Image: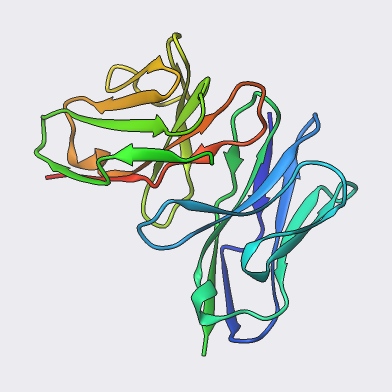
Length: 112
Length: 115
């Protein structure tokens, strides 16, 4: 079975500063990795996903993530955040024909 | 493409009554559907997995007689919360996945409040 650990429950950051949200995973098989964003009282929006190929994945809203197999990590980054990036971010892992497992979430708060 | 809808988006019911939530894949056939529950400020917890035409597989600790899941067609799954109680109040999210696919597509969620 797969599992995900998000290393930070809360990340406060000032507007226009860079940010990194950390995610480690565990699995005995090849996996697919995802980052989702959730705004209050809304569903999940896919930011980006890693399936195979290039380890640097670019997503929407200026986010990117790097898959590191040796460190079993998939950290999310953005070079310059905006107030509108304030939200809950979830890292998730799945294997083909398996269910998806989510991390506990990281609350990103962007301050002016 | 790959749109999943949920209905209703919000529902308030009285304690002891039952409520049904629908999850539909609008533009693809979903051989597998998943139901998640999310409490405030917490992550999504998988409740059950259902394959079209088969009985749902429930996660440990989820009462299958309380949370009835039906996946009658390749585009529709329903979750019925029977004899709802205030502690069942939560955000319920479904997702759908085509056969042999790696990605799930999520619905917008249903906010259930039991008074």
